[in-house]
Length: 320
Image (cartoon, rainbow, N blue to C red; front, side, top):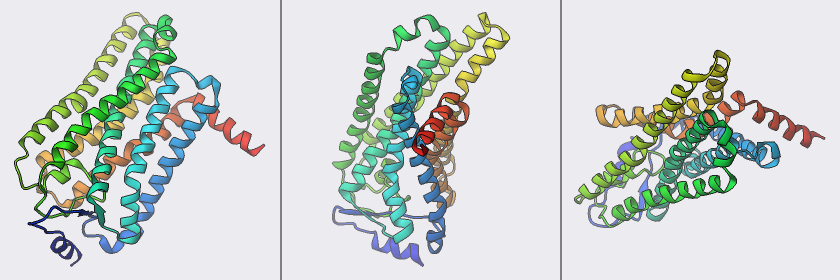
């Protein structure tokens, strides 16, 4: 009864929609207040976890090293991704606020996709860091200087912003004359473009190029870096050194899996399960967006002794 009403309100075939209508959890609209509890917990874990890691790295001079500076970039990206979707998700679940303005939706699309691409780019930079640390240990400090890391960070921001902006300009020029009902509780580019009633071939080709540039190229380069690491370690290292090298890379490997496994899953669902219930797509999309920000702080806290010690010092200092 709720969904048909929303769909009837969301149809406009004559005017540019000045707002879109967000969708909650299909079939469970009456339980949104209860569903908000786990969402609230996950958002809280993400914000507190990533903020704690940023604070620890900022306040501990011993952590001002390339590996931890890249980790702080990852935490900052995860924090941005969390704060991008939090307002619309929680106001929908708590207050049933479904409308989002045209401009706000475009802004959310920009930040959501930018931070999502930044996540992939930072993981690629961290893979390069691990490659240099293991395969070129004597030159590690001279290669990854503070200036180099700063330039890498700026390059990541420029790369992702320039990748996302053209798709928004291409989308904004098109008329929206179908239903204004989106499929999620936040705005996605692929969700908005299906509401367009014009030729979207240029948008589709640009999106395909973007997928090749970032979603395909980044994990391939990460695989190449780990192939080189594996070749170097197996060729020269002892059993103990191999274990140490693997342990040093384990946190990053887990972070890569947390990002790319849900990403591949949601891509496969859109490609091969188009007729699956909407609930399936909604759950997979939320898993894809919430997994990295929630899991990365946990992974690096559990697997990195220096981060655990920094957290202990941080809270010990506050207690004193």
